[in-house]
Length: 74
Figure 1 (cartoon, helix red, strand yellow):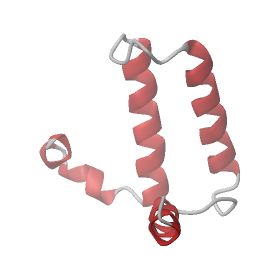
Figure 2 (spheres, helix red, strand yellow; figure 1 turned 90 degrees about the vertical axis):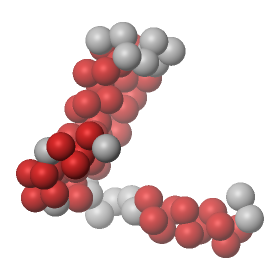
Figure 3 (cartoon, rainbow, N blue to C red; figure 1 turned 135 degrees about the vertical axis):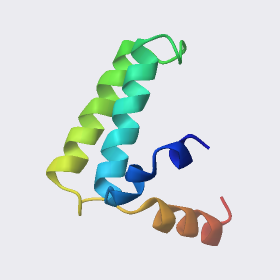
């Protein structure tokens, strides 16, 4: 796993990890790593990330969402 090669990543708090993940995804998309991702999709992801950074308590965690999906049978 790549993260194991960079143990300092474990020092990041969850918000920093999400920001890093979004930055890496954006770089990969712009570098051709994800060719089906359009510039509009990148823009939307960046807007969502900005919204999250501005208001981190305004949404639900991934764990909560997955639990809710399992409970509803989705």
